Image (cartoon, rainbow, N blue to C red; front, side, top):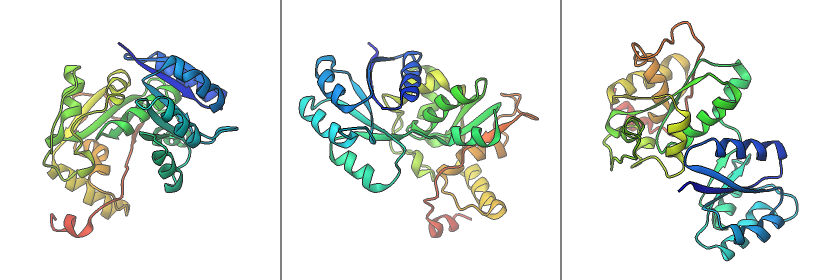
Length: 269
């Protein structure tokens, strides 16, 4: 049974694009879409979708208030805020109103492709799959033909096993320095997106991860956390060799996350 998704977004082009992406993804179906909160509040109680993608900056009733009213009508509904806002106040207000999470309209993949042009490969860190699936969907739209590869730690390889077996696998409390990738599994929403839009999954060891992370610190002068170095590690450690014809091609790497415990990490040198 596909996951039924409704969209509340006043940008007509974006709303139509999201609907197309959802309908072309196995396991998902867009059942309705709305340009404003008023129409959504009148119609959603009758449709009762599983998930609602909700913009914050809507005309009339804004997205935060719409979530608050919608949760009173449908307490069990899952609402993901779809927004350009990254400030904590907007995020807190949305979550306090009953939202289950949020997704940014812009992704590193879209920004990278807009800056550099089309890519042949894009490597992305993977934890719960939010960043990876978002980048993969964006790459499919902004750089058709780009092969997206997710990278996770060897000790927390649930996404790689899920990708290979096509069934959701778990990994509880993995022992890895990549603390941002210690998630037990891909999410209910991200798993089918990863299966549909991602081309391969790779893993790297903690030792390899440390080498690459310190190299980035020293040579590029960018202080990143271990999880943020996952994708770069796969490239620097030759993990694509023998699997992908990437040499001489345009390869993008997402480096994401600067929450590094410097003292703890330096003890590992």
